[in-house]
Length: 199
Image (cartoon, rainbow, N blue to C red; front, side, top):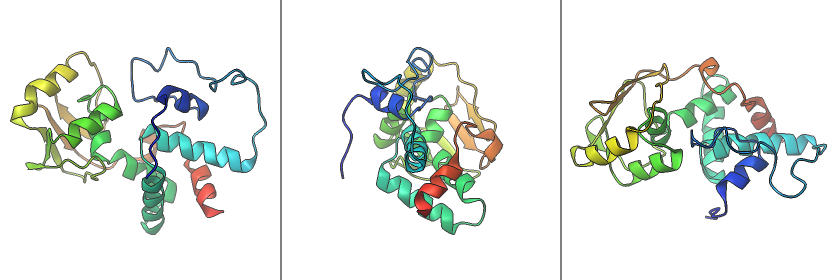
């Protein structure tokens, strides 16, 4: 599977990703596309608009093309509004939950924390970042990893989303419920993603 190893910030700027998974960098980065002509206005085709929105959401959650397509197909088969269900799947990923709770500075770091086996889900070690957390699941940090995760958490001052309860001192997250669409990023236009895959 192809993996992008170039400069992430340049890639994010090209697709208009404002959440760069790094709270410290969001305000300081330019919002125009990279390159000499990045600020030039370009008339995009319908296909380019649909593609850009799909890439923006995919890069925000740092998932591969193959993974994103699987999430879309699963969302299309699930009862409910396909676009909303798609975003809910992405929000329920274990690495994203760890990031949202403030246990990591970036989504990449959250993925590494999960990959290295630092977290438990309902008391069992889970080292798969794409693991989908369910309502009522309890995510905790392994005792041996407590100091490491604490060192990451200390400089952060992040308010936990309404759909999860975070106890920073106990290093525990309770995923209370699946978030509603109005609680998720209002900049996402998931209908364009549906149109992209419907062609």
